Image (cartoon, rainbow, N blue to C red):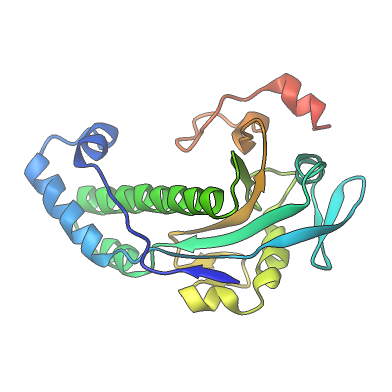
Length: 220
């Protein structure tokens, strides 16, 4: 297991202002400064290999992951990188204590952006270290085809390793701290987004449009 400590994050106040449609730049800068003092971005990842492939599942380090989409994405892949990323609990604790609903919303949104930046850092780290041209990722719960229950299998790859960056999985499959993400990175020639197979409308986190033909191609 590899661990990345104190991941450096650069949050652009101009982009944050535009995304949040904030009017008071001074207030936003104060909140951003506060958020950055509370964020501690860390990550762990494993280098794993595919043991066996089935029609709608793959065996990774002796653990079976059931997903038709994941199986197809790993069809020509031998090496993958399961990961867990977090920005720590302090920012969400501060947001939870805010009586001002707008401040609470801003801090929560800044936390989401910081977590996205931490993911980008890990992706870049993997590409440089392992000389990869491109990576895509999937996470349990991102599609009905790979349900949130698969988090147990993913976390079992790390044994107790996730605790080394302060992340634990509850009985209800919620990661704590809440500003944490997990999944599997894999080499790819064409970038894959789970969003392409998800028809849900009104999703703020959407990274690509739903593609009905692609979904049919995956057997969904």
